[in-house]
Length: 442
Ligand SMILES: Nc1ncnc2c1ncn2[C@@H]1O[C@H](COP(=O)(O)OP(=O)(O)OP(=O)(O)O)[C@@H](O)[C@H]1O
Ligand SMILES: [Mg+2]
Image 1 (tube, rainbow, N blue to C red):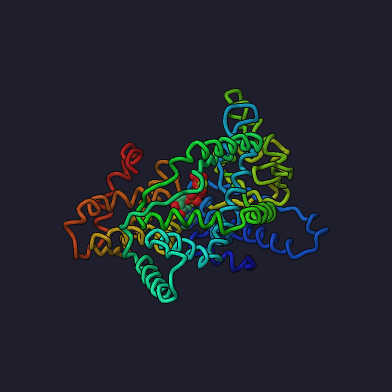
Image 2: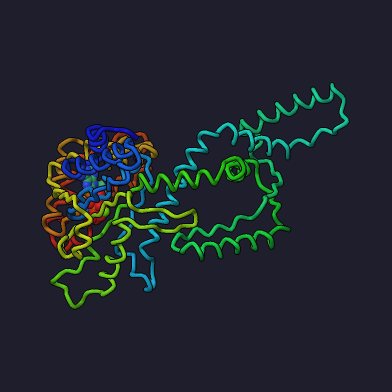
């Protein structure tokens, strides 16, 4: 997608308040990849992505920025926690599995695209299969006029299936093979192959009972999968997916601070942390990783690492790894004003979410501006007094404010409920100022 950095930032502004620097840096990194793809191949091979390290305390929007971006750009994207990996040889996931996860994600993007492009083909396939089951076939020797009649019947039946009229009817479907999908991407390709043969054996064993009675409604869903296997060219999807993951993939490495060795806790450190960092080096720098779908080169995958770095500092990472994240951005802590804006200006704001949820019960929820100010203020205060958990505090605070209303919603059907500053203070003042209480409740 060829959005300019400004357009990317504008888009992000709808969801993430402040954090200008982080948004700009990431927008620029994405644009650079677009620019790179326009160059000729020799030049292209020379230009390496500049990986980004986002530093900021918890709940200030690190993950949110990346998540929104990936959604908008429709590029292969995965978010992984650095802390869940272990050094090769230890029990746990090895770091290469993140590349395999990225490829799987890429495949699902390309596949969805192809399904959308072939929507009418797939629809037809499904419809034909179902109608076939509902209408007995016409004998070959049928006369011309019979054929015409049959054609009319067929069309009428197609309409009825499409309209959902036949949804509850039971039909019998045969499935080509029972698909035993093992989708554990943690496995190296050799093991994956073994698994595949297993699936095939299973399919053989299950051959006898591969007929199933299902409702038409469910057949519509089940047959779509079959249709996309039959109609789409899986090999070219896989190849395209590999290419995209290789050139446009983004891996968001969250909690990178958790694998740093801080000086303070030296001695108590898990020795495998450094191992994980060492294992990460070749992947971040560029190496080949083999997957079930082919080999992928990680040179041009963009890595965005993020961490709060409360206990440890970026300089506690091993120097080689530090050097592979040349772009550093710091995210600001959230002020009372930013919290207010998060509540009022974001596209998906919590206030809108609660209003919509209660709308289902016939309750019209309205927040007075003063009340929103009070919520922001008290959230900020709670962050100061206990831990600073950023915008996540808004969730707990709002939950507390709306708890009762939400519970009694059925009694307020058809009413407008106004949230006033007075109500907010009543619900929260005591809790916020009482340190012990707020630690538990907020
Ligand atoms: N600047 C912001 N603007 C809008 N919403 C925000 C902002 N910061 C955080 N949020 C909201 O707060 C929640 C947590 O944010 P996010 O997941 O980005 O935290 P984080 O910085 O990744 O924290 P952690 O270090 O704990 O992973 C999300 O629901 C997000 O929408
Ligand atoms: Mg996060």
